[in-house]
Length: 146
Image 1 (tube, rainbow, N blue to C red):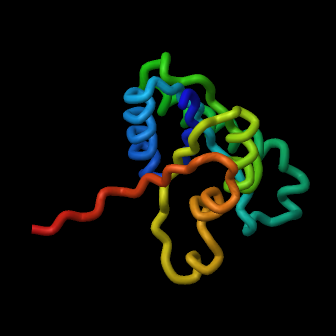
Image 2 (spheres, rainbow, N blue to C red):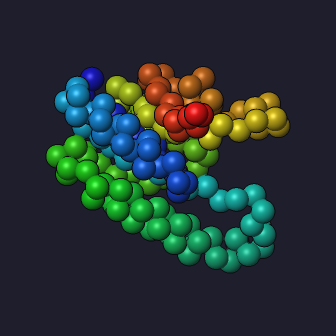
């Protein structure tokens, strides 16, 4: 195993996912490619989007790239093989990018949704079901009682 695709979102769970990927990469001598997908929320007014689409997308991708670069600074640069930002539906972009980069493993976080989200499926569930690569889903540590 030489290349791991690490999928990071803007949530507070991203450092946990990156730490798990970094630890695994260090243990097996793999390199990391960091990925952030950018999607436009459906609630954005379509008329506004027609007039400002390129500016909105450019701002969102630029922000995502800067965020990934900040995460990368916390690691040894020898671990990082690339930083990638793509616009699209998260699970589909992840599956396509894993194949395009010839990654051996995809690592992403779990949101732990319930109810209606379980019926529709989360990004993690869709990646597990559709990706042609092995997938590791990182969950937060369960609350310890006692």
